[in-house]
Amino acid sequence: MWEDFLYVVVLLTCVGFGHYYRNIKEVKSKQWLGTIFGLFVSTLVSGWHVAHPIIFTIVNGFIISRLSPKICHLVSFYFSCFHLLVICRLGWFGIPIPPGHTNLIMMILTLKVPGMAFEVNSARQATEDDPQGLKNESLQNIGVLDVFHYAFSYMGVLTGPYYRYRTYWDSIHRNFAKHVDPWPAVSRKLIAVAVYIVLFIVFSKSFPAEYVLTEEFAERSLLYRIWYIYPAFVTFRTRLYTGMALAECACQMAGLGAYPTSCDPTPGGGPRNYRLAENLHDNDEKLKLEEIDFETVHNMKVWELEKSYSTRVAMKVWNCCAQYSIAMMVYKRFPIKSLRTLATFLFSSVWHGYAAGYYFGITSVAFYLPFEDIYIKIYKQLPEDGLAKKSMTVFMWFMRTSCMAYLSFAFQLLEFYKTVHYYYSVYFAGHILVAILYGIGKFASPHILVDKKRKEL
Image (cartoon, rainbow, N blue to C red):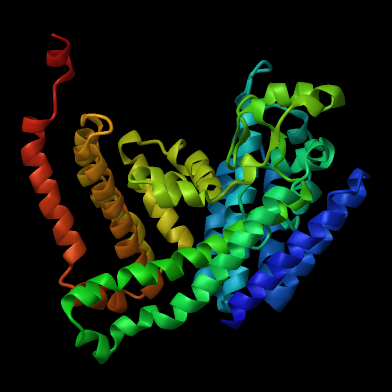
């Protein structure tokens, strides 16, 4: 609980610091102040273990700035994974394993810094008239110091969100944020954070995950043992919502990720139409007429997640910026197309850690999706506003929530024995139910689904 308290206090400090930081106009002063404060935050939560992210960043700085753009992204990616997964996680070479907060810093750096190398590589292949502006001036003459500033800028240094180097560069050199007041949006999120914290404290005390390992829990009814995943899922969600919302607030208060809505910004990636952003950035008169948003650093879309009846949709709005980074580096670049999804799930699992719970929680989603796909097809063919479709919406929402609650328990217990112990205590009810419903759906769907070609005839 003390670590969670420190985590929240540090993030709130970053939010408050942004009010001062955003108003600094001189580029070098702003850049150095953000980096120094980021180093201070990293040292505060890591102690001497801060050597890990510092050495990691310096080595990557030389890789990105000295090696050819043809290979720097691969070398940076493999070195970063080796440093996180072997040196930090396994403590090889007699190096002590860093604490939890340092692990968070290393996790986000393992996305950010190789991501920067991938940007450099993409710029090499881009055409001059590319609407995404991959070959823009932010990626010209990259040096070790540029990598260091990006890695240790206080905005997202502790827990993300992931954002591209170009987004960071724009926040320093192209200050779209001066045309928008971030406080209204930030204040709404801070109110939500207060609610999340209260819910987290209440539910974590009332429904601790470790309770499922006790003899008292084993003596409870089967219905209660299954039901327990739902209040425990509230604890899991509110903890993540708190951290990610505060991280978003810190970025918004600093002016990071502000772009005109007309440029079609996306979480993690920034504007799809970057050329338009380039044309607008020095035209104050036009920018005054533009709506500016912070969609680029919108990492957790809570309401969209809570109301979603589809696990696929829920996954897309959960940790959006990190998903963008992993998709850019793993999914889109993996050479065997048929294995891209599996490779992405495995990378996501190992990125979180070696605990068995991560693999249970993440890779098991792949076995749930075929069931959902069948029922989504049936759902889409039901008459609009009919009782059947409304009932199906409730059913699919309940199944999506149950799937995430059931699998997230593995994230909370983490260890193989503990995870299997809980699933065994409920007789693997979630796995069996999905298998039965999949079989029913597979059998019934040919008799329910309408062939579009026949329908047209």
